[in-house]
Image (cartoon, rainbow, N blue to C red):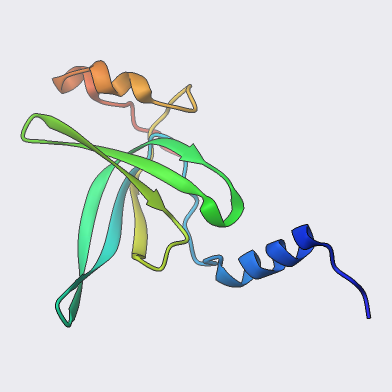
Length: 120
């Protein structure tokens, strides 16, 4: 019997919980994320649309930060993409960006905060 070290055991456990049907997500993409919400004994899916401004790759703990502007107020939400609470992720449009983190969008207003669409 082969003895596995702790790191390999943890990686084997993580592989079991990774989602396999995720789309290719990149910075600047406009996405629509379905989040499962439990209200009492009912469960429903609420959609959140926005732009990915940051991504942190870390196996099962991979997160994306999604920003949207609602009634003039910027709202950012961090999603664990392999979480069972995340029902679906759909890429609506891709944008051409030159940065890995788009935190500068927080300071821009109106048309200045638009990103150029990538046609690829």
